[in-house]
Length: 478
Picture 1 (cartoon, rainbow, N blue to C red):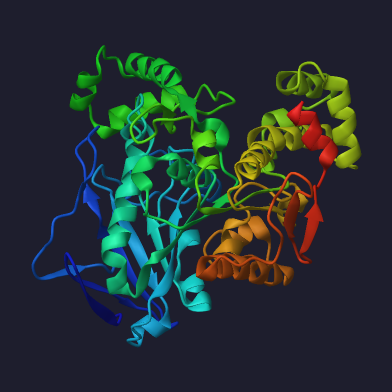
Picture 2 (picture 1 turned 90 degrees about the vertical axis):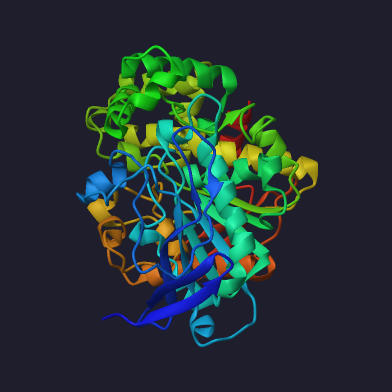
């Protein structure tokens, strides 16, 4: 029987796991409850001892791309899903009372899938390596979390951060040194949290990985898509959705998602809306917290490398894709991408441009706005390319997650990264910078400004680059 740990929190006693590596894990801790389409309320205190040795249910969803690719079955789902996991280092297990830095992970999944309990997000390795506390949260997804302009999923994240403020000291964490980090929808979530007045004082530093900033939408778009959802669900009013089952709502959600629009904004943070009174990127640019933001080199290869479009790509189809992104500069754009991506296929050139359109250039625009505002910002670029599947994934979207957590041995990681020895070198580099930043805000490279545009390259050999690929940046800025 696994060894257990008992901790007394402001809400009651919780029993977690003492792991063989010396760390502790407290899983499935409920931080709030919520009725459908209603804001979350904090979990009430309890008497006795609450079991925290297993993950709680995940929020209702269909399998995401990673789950589908790996053939992994989804864990149990429930609308009652607002739980989190806390991972503590050996020093806390041994009884040390010194407050540790806290890292709070917000998972990605396009705001429609994912969970904090995904094995790639297990925080024990980071906790052990950096003597830090790692928290990984669930929040409501899809129609349950982002319908019209309610932003309930973002409000859930804020409620989880309030829980951290009031409870993390019991787990050895310092509530005055909290770093929020996330990837993709999680990366854009942490940016949106910077834009929300409701998050004031709940975190101090931000690490945003491949933020899907293009998913943000205004309230007009949110209401337009909500009306489409009602039609897909076969009802006329929002109130009628309360009578439908979770499966019926997911089925209607699937109808919208099957349209596969480029913005993928069917369910996403909306402004003005609950907790987000102002345009999100502009408000985040003015936030005083230290921000690290970056992308991978080949984000869209995750979505396109095995697609039918890639297999059938020819020059005419390539030009059609480029015309959809840069309609007035097709010839110039194709020539520039051929120059910057020598030897890549037509399909890979399209994916390179889609990477810039959806992720990299939007992250650069955010860094530029923050440079103009004088708010502290660092930028990185993850370029290590996976050899898996003959190298077609390159440095694709989400490939940096197991390196960030130093979780190279978790299930499914090797499928995407291969098993080469250089993986550990890259993981050492990335995890070390994340932990240094969480501890005291220090980093190995210079801040981002509009003169030098310093960017840290994460790879087997890391380096600081001044304004990488400036001609592509200029292409998109124009």
